[in-house]
Image 1 (spheres, one colour):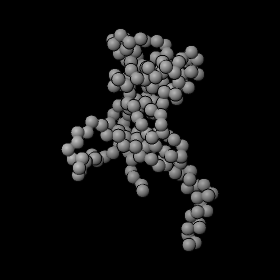
Image 2: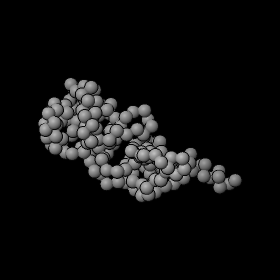
Image 3: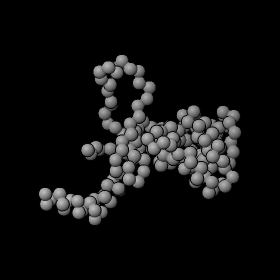
Image 4: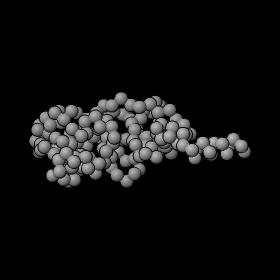
Length: 166
């Protein structure tokens, strides 16, 4: 099945300077570690897990703790600066794109992409009276890069040749 997925416009988290100001206004602790995390999240389209961010942050600031990463991400999510995303890989992902969108996960390379669905889903039948608070759709398949690589692979070409001879 092929679907047409349009990439969304990125409505990201506030800038690191703006986040620092928000933390000051809310009288939250503002440390160099948190400021580093603000910078790593700014316009980050990779949907990182806390562990991913910790790995990157540790290279830039060896003393940072995983606890600080989790605590900062949790506070940003509570403030509406990040969305928590479950794409089915077991890890909570953090999405700084606060615009309305869904996700596509490549089953080959693991990349996660923001996508927009052009029509509004409707609930029919038994669930027609439900009050929906949130909708999250995750598409799984191959991204264009992996799909193109598969089509060029010798194994795929051989399968196409065998299929033609049948």
